[in-house]
Length: 612
Ligand code: AGP
Image (cartoon, rainbow, N blue to C red):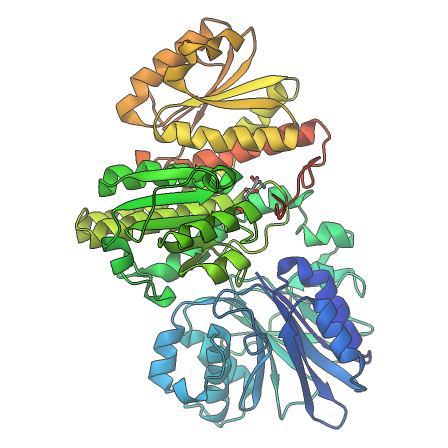
């Protein structure tokens, strides 16, 4: 995610833009930049890597009088965290800021011969050149029409975007258009505004409108005009702000965690779809050679916490598919285990922050042993990303809540893409099998939307969970791998002691802990071991446990086995982790909230553990 602000009006545009960026910084903080139209009709462009505070300091010296400008905070997706890649980007007469991912930007570069013009590594600069092209070469009428330039550009682009544009020869106006990525706009007594969300607007006005997709907004000093792609003026649907600033940063949700849980469908789309080519996984964008996958004889996955539990799911898929040893290692242990690895070992590092010190140390150790490093990271340009041989970025956007949710799902998504690519190039999967694997992966997105569409079962479970002192999460095979993350979620935000256990292992000791009403979340989504898991559930039910059973739809199970039965959307066994993860996140969230705890900032924890 990135933060966007545009303004025109009587106020000092530099001040309005900087204040707006400060409010939007939670959306991305790799770099910040702004473009200001000065009173003498020049364009002042300032942008650099680093937080908004750096831009604010740099711009302090700039004595400029401006009443029209745009600003951007970046969460890097294409191109490293550098000054050059920071937004705004200027191309000819166009200066542009962007939030989103342009999926066909390579094709646009070739089709319109932009290669020689490009100075950055971003897809955004390509969009700027495209809009400039249609602004100066429109085939559908005289050049110099900003509205038509935007319409023709978005008809060429595939992907998600929120563009804010200044045209060199059109002073005092800001143009914008969106598809998927959010934009809100407002007109007030002190000018007109456009931004990624309300946080940047609500200190000026309580009235706003959500910019409809593929409609052009033209900010003029007195009004914010809305036109559809056919050029018709459209009356915006005005809304009333009823949030304070902090609430607005949460997009109206009570906590960042529930907001981020709800962002998972879009995060998965941003992470999966740009890496598909003809329905098959394609890592050419990240310059990852297939030899990395064909040459390795074993795989070591190393991470901490939730990232490590994502690795457990990865192992459960990779090992049977590739028929090579796959180990999952706790980074803080891996460092002291004299691991057996060499240049024939592929080490996969998983980290949301890319700064976890134990994971970084494990990366360096693996490198010393000659292993090649592939990392799965959410923060562009982070230390782990920079020290890896290859990086597959997840596109979850900033994850603010300490408890990882959307980052876990997108880590899984990258692992699924990796499994499929590795199986394909190692001839463990035919192209047809790979295509149906990817089709199943894409079905997880509507499946998650379906789970998010009915929160009642999870709220019902949490009503029982809030009074628990202990809880168990059990499953077999992949279901056991899922249960590890579910237990961690509950523990870290509700402070209930929760333990994940291989269902078949309970009777070897731990079942002694089961007493009347002990909550047991039983995950039974894997058909080939379903009956075995049900018999383990009967064992805890026989001790009066309170069983929350999660199965695929239509599972053949007697109601005497469970107290609550949550049925998943239809998915094949290997893909049930995605809706299961969301259900377990929601159970943990509503339990913590029901206990009146600080969901986003649980005690004793930090978002990124940079101490050993
Ligand atoms: C998960 O909810 C926690 N926030 C924690 O376990 C986290 O996953 C772990 O510290 C690893 O962090 P990283 O992914 O940034 O490396």
